[in-house]
Image (cartoon, rainbow, N blue to C red; front, side, top):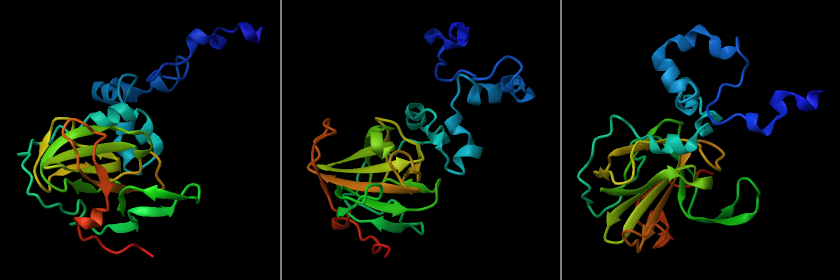
Length: 228
């Protein structure tokens, strides 16, 4: 009887990373004979890092978001961690577009009025963005609707955050210089397209990621006007 088939048993539910086809299926392809490919994209790898998929900004980014957010970059070099005391636009050297300001707005998903705690800077997926100032990374992880998320403590009660990133190049404890590349623009989490949601926190207390108050980033940085 079908109800007694082995694949109907709860104990045979596929785990994360398992191949899904039967013997002789896709996993038997010659491509898996390459140890490097098998290691990176096979059962113990992370398909979300496949550059061919990530380049077109598909949901492959969400295959294993916890891993994707914490991997960082093998090319990242520690900065000084010293802040200049003045914030700079994280996409200043790119042709970004402001698609949503800080404050009350219409939610792009529901159409209802809601509060937006940052400013949305739209650009092509994969575009590098920079730390607004020097400091220490206190969060670099998947953060619910914010997707891949970075929070940097700049000292003196000032912090900045960067959300919906395609890739985080930094991890918790990393020190960065002002203007150092820390990630790439993406559309992870609850997002309608590639951008970074950039936020500024005043009154941040070291060691307490929930402290402080989000303020209008335009208080510190002269951004372009909102796209009409």
